[in-house]
Length: 509
Image 1: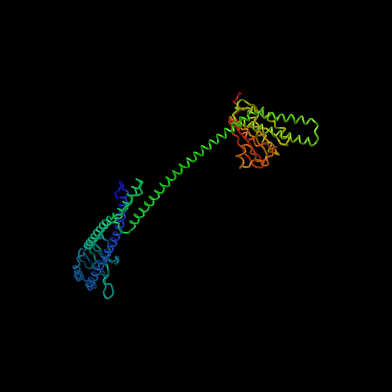
Image 2: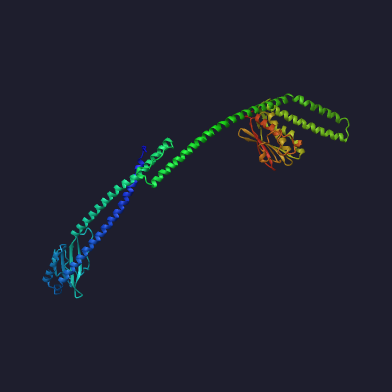
């Protein structure tokens, strides 16, 4: 497998492995070398000590008679046996009195008196040039004096350093051999890994998962490297299979998306046509109702006239009761017709807002005159809250009054105790208008539907006395014309508040 550029990282791995092997080998050889050097030194030290002790014992035996009789000449002759030991530089015999009786060799460094000198065996380091020995001379089990020896260690040190040099050379040779073997075996390990990495880079660069890593000729046996190559190739094969499956799934998904898109386009077109047809029908209905509003109201007015004429004919009790029911039916029919005609006007665009300056005090006075008696009839409190002083709105007064009538009328209908509050608060350059009530409230699941036509959350029996479910639908349309939005907050059993915002009139108007 050809290698891609940029293999410096793998050279770094090779160097690290080589340094690791070299470090381990160096540590092992160093431990071996130090251990051998210590053993060799202990051996040399023991040989020197034994040699000097044996030599001192032989010289002491030879000079024991001369030492016992304090014979200087005989003692000097006895010390001449040390000539056989070339390492002995100097020696001296001392009687128990401590003075020097006889000497051998260079007496310059020998002590004159040993009364205060302690007995000791040879002791030295690898760098010592000489060592000394001081031990008693014994005759018949009793000490009769002492022998002092000074021996040169140059020959022993030279021999030891030669052995140490040979040992260091042998260890360096072993280290070089270990480095050569490490390089050879590391190459056998790193080469297939490097080839495997090259294959992975080719796959990553080309996105071709059909490439495979080829096992190195040096790793044809079954080892961890071979298992790694096999696992890598198996992974590539699995990725290639999944890539093919993903491509086929993608093509299938694209075809299904195209089919569904075409179906949705057709369905949306049909829905659009149906929506346009429904809107056209609704608009036509609204236009018809708006155009025929006068004609539709004439029969109701005629019925009212006939009913009033009938009431003046002197009806009995049963006839009066029937006349009362007829009045309620005429009233409900009139309210329904008025609501339908209002919605028709708003839907056809026949009503256009005409904004102007509207005083809040006059607006609330008109609303109070219209609804205070209706609230008092149900024993409800009907109050207003607004800032003191002259406050004016810049809006369409007729549309705003219609919006408030629907919200207040709806609040009074669904409030049995407590009251209704109409409030206005300043919010910067806008007025926040709110209609509060203590009525039955609106459940959370019904709040999204309360502005739909004919929806009444608190009138499941469809009692006409509670309205027709068109008040809030008309209010929403009026709010849209006034470029505002009605927001509802409610707690079931506690009451509701409907609020919207309108611009305040500029100062001075």
